[in-house]
Image 1: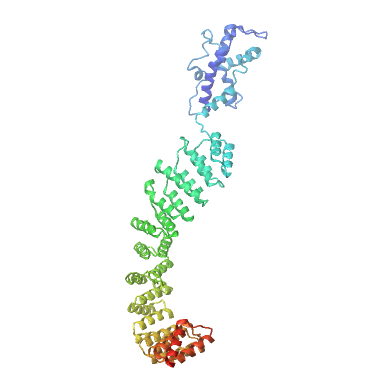
Image 2: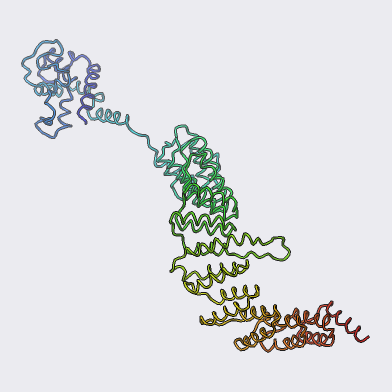
Length: 609
């Protein structure tokens, strides 16, 4: 590697040295030995072009004899031929052109020249400072290396820049002016180093990036954009996230293909974390414009961000695009999407996602499926003062979907699916589809999950409302045969069914059985019987039940007294019993309302008059 370089450099120097040398004919020799002018000129002219031989022996070889052997792959070339271009200095005098056969070899010539140089100090002074073998070789080598050298940044300047960026509160103008004055080389490696440096505020990274965009020598690449997005999203700050989005818009419109899908997904996730669902949806809508492909992560992150801010209609549109594209995320995320849609009331959309995943043979988390079944079976109740009406036709459709989903449960999953099965039975009873509810209850008994009191009570209540008391009693017997104990609610709904049909004797039998099984009954139990006796105008039995309520741990409330007093006044015309009940209310700390009190006084005055 060094041989061609050294040869070329020494050739040039030899030519330059000849031009600098004064005529050697006037040199004075200090020693007694004199040298012929022609011979001296020949020798010194030869040395000016050939002086490197001594240096080369000293620099390139460690052989004290001064003989250097070339590798076998290169044929030996005489040094004279190398320098003079096939001109033989051993036979021609450099000065007068005469032949000198007495020159046997170059070493003898070189030795003669060195002896004359030692004798004549003036020649040494001429070469001093103008011809230096080592210095010129170093210079030429450095010059040759600089041709392929890549400019690098000064480490001290880089550290100063990083310290400047890490300091917060720096004015934008001063920051840019300081960066301009540093004269930094803006290549990809340097920019990535800055963006990956910790503890740099996001706003300073945005300023730095906008500054390098103004430099025409720098070309933005995808790794640089991804590093910037990663650094900014670590801060979770709203202002920086929006500034990053503006910057991505600028770059994406000018440089197609630079903004990647990963960049936009990270930005959507960032907007989701800071609760900006609309901004996340805007990023989602820019994918096609930037030439980025929507993947499974894109759909999931966008739906999650929109559901957090209750933008369920937008989430539904994104979900539809996801199903049309076929890019479903992993099963865990699909389960979360289903849960999010159910929370927003989009149960049918959630069911479509479930069916699509089922067709793809994706096994979703059991908790998500249970939540979907429960959402499809949710009973919509309307409060007082609202104009919302229950759409029972829609309820029938949704509960049918839930009922179909129950068939997909495996034998193992059914054992732990009591809640979803119970919710479906409740909804069937709510829409008065008692036959399917009873059928599902019997399936639970045969194949699981084992039904509890709640499921039996729902079916029994539905049967009593439909007037099928025989089937209701069979269900209660089936409940007891399975080792369960009828609770107060079970007895109450059966008594209510009998009382509604006027069969107070059967209702009283159930009441007696309830008193044996439970020491404390509920107000509903007594209210059912009182209403039944009043309907049959058996007011004495109704009044006696008011006295029994305290014995079973139930205190009659204002509503019980008020309804019974009104019945006594309006139907039985018994103001005396009504007045006694009013006094009993006062003793219990209850106050009868003014209208009912006025009714008692009016009836009393009318009867006594």
